[in-house]
Length: 124
Ligand code: THU
Image (cartoon, rainbow, N blue to C red):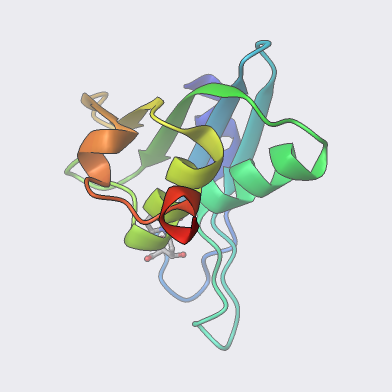
């Protein structure tokens, strides 16, 4: 949780002003954190969750146990559809905990967030 809040401080969100932090814990206990990164084209924005996943994957890490996502919104922020797809494919059915500045938290499993997922099994 603290790693996600720390990463959120680095958010590049000049366009939305919506700062997001994420922290992904690998199976062996290492933490990979990320923040959302926006740019002038808007569409090339990468969410905090995907930054965290891509950091871990690019360092050769392939097994994960949980992910935390934090925002300053009043209500809990669930992950966007693109992040659900990536998290499902690379992290599997891990718990995702979302929190906000009030300290409220909500935890889902990825299979709840992305039921009937399309993944590599559908390509066989
Ligand atoms: N965002 C995330 O980083 N994660 C989410 O789960 C939802 C949205 C970012 C994308 C964009 O930079 C900003 O929040 C507003 O959509």
